Length: 541
Image (cartoon, rainbow, N blue to C red; front, top):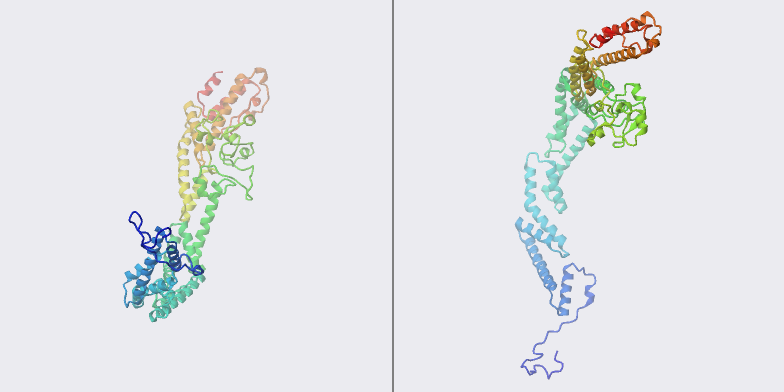
């Protein structure tokens, strides 16, 4: 400025003056002052402001830095005044601490002022709480320990009330350690009651006194509950709880013996029930097996697969079923015996893809291999006999223990019993099996029995009766169609005698020596089956 002019204050043609105002020159900033000063400290902010003045440039950032420096100086003054004041308010101290947390500048005295403010706040608010706790009847150990820890962290651990509270808390903590050891060692009731008596003499309530009192109360009620469990009906869960509590409270073995016997009988019963229902190789429990859908993995004890296991559509009780070839479903990757899903060996070799009945139903497509019958349904269990299941339930009632398994087994037995009544009526000697309607009803009943998980007592009889009838019809058809010259095998008189007990029949090659004797034998068989219109044509012939 001033270059090319006539001197200071000289006017130009427009009447304006150049150099009329001079800026005050300042000493250049000493860069050595920046060494060791953090940029986010108050000194760093002041150095940045000095640089801004040296550059002679006004900016928004510089204005913000000036406001920040002013707020820091104002906060420092307010904090010092609050510390020097005899009784500042708790709200004022809390506000200063809140303002400090919002200041983004590093202050050398931040920690000191923060501790001082927190100490003063503790003396104003928390110290009365500690004094009230000391005067109370039995403050909790957690409350007293928390107040003492706060005071020690602020450097106030030497206050008389803090020392007194810490002594009482230490006594309660020592008692807690003894109580923990007593609970872990399962000491007797006398020792536990002695510890509770000592706890009542402490000025601070220990934290483990509630657990110790609960142990004593449980032991006092254990005897009454144990007596009810032994003499009345109880659940498996209650038995397990009583035995666990007896172990924890060191109940003498002689007093636990009735419960142990009942629990052992219950375990033995559950093992027998599981053996009756759960398929071989199934890793599910009895309850899970009864509630499942029949589709689960069957493995040997070493985790392998056994070819003799049942598939989802058989019980595994028949070695004829488990010895058949197996076919895998391309949808669910499970394997089934071919006959169990209605697939022959020739069909299995010819097909390129197979979906089991369950997967076909899930896809909404008809099952191809039902052969005119309803598709097979999964069998969840081994389907024990109804008489054996009834005996198991009677044993469970005699044990007077209610288990989830018994509640799951009862409806299965009821369904089998409900099926048995009409089936026995169809098989009654007063009824005639060969009647077309009754025969159809019996076939329908046998088909419905395939959905039962307990085998009715009359089901084997019904199947045997149908098999005898089917064999009779085959023999009758063979007799009608066989040429006379081929009907000449010789048989004994014993083979011609009909039997109502034997389920076997005369085959086509076992007919008597002449056609008349063979027809008479078949008529005798028809009489054993109950007669009916099927034998009328043969009798006329």
